[in-house]
Structure formats: structure tokens, C-alpha cells
Image (cartoon, rainbow, N blue to C red; front, top):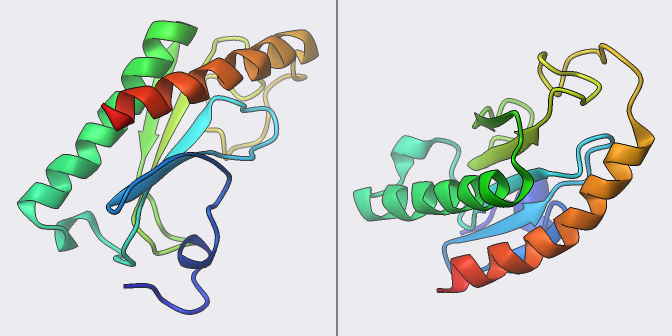
Length: 142
């Protein structure tokens, strides 16, 4: 079930990393945050409670899998999880690896930056995320 005009029904929403009948995982295009991922539910629902028990389990297992891969391979300072949906009311979870050197830390990625981005570290992280995408796809396919 899709909804006309919904950007997450009509577009992948970023670089597609994995997709099955229930959800997809994308690497978001968010300046300064290459390790920003989203788990997007395939059907157009606005709230987590609209899913069946089985679907909620599948969705959260995907969120946990993304978090585990990011933690294991990037060793971030913190993982941020969010399911806001205020701007795009299509169920999706943000899974964001955060580092004490990122431009917004310890604030939200949606807040004003607190310092100048570290271009060298961002470039290194961007390269690591290419491998993360391969690892995520393999883990979610298993």
C-alpha cells in the first residue's frame, strides 16, 4: 500500500543499501553525517502501532541490525535512534552513528552546528560507509 505524494512511497529516500518486501535500508544524504541510515517501512503507515506484532518485530530487528553494524565497525561515541515522522508521516527509523568530533555533537543532527566540520574525518567516515553498506546488506539478507 502506497500513498500518492509521499516521498518515501515514491522514492528510495537515499542510497539504497537493502530492500525486501517489508522494509528498506538507505544511507541518507545528510551533509556532515555519512553514517546516517534510515529503516523505512515499505507500506505507507504513519505509526509504529499500526504494524502487527510480527511486523514490529521485523522492523525493530532491522533497526538493531543497522545499529550493531555501525557500532561494531565504526565505534561511534553514540548511536542516535529516532522515529519522528512529523515532516514525512511514513514510518521510518533514523539510525545515526554520532562521534564526539562531529559538527553537532552532543546536540541533535537537526540542531545548529556547534563547530566547523572536520573534513578529513568526514572523508574517512564516508569511505568506511561504503564497506558498511556491503556489511549491512549481507547481515539483513541472512
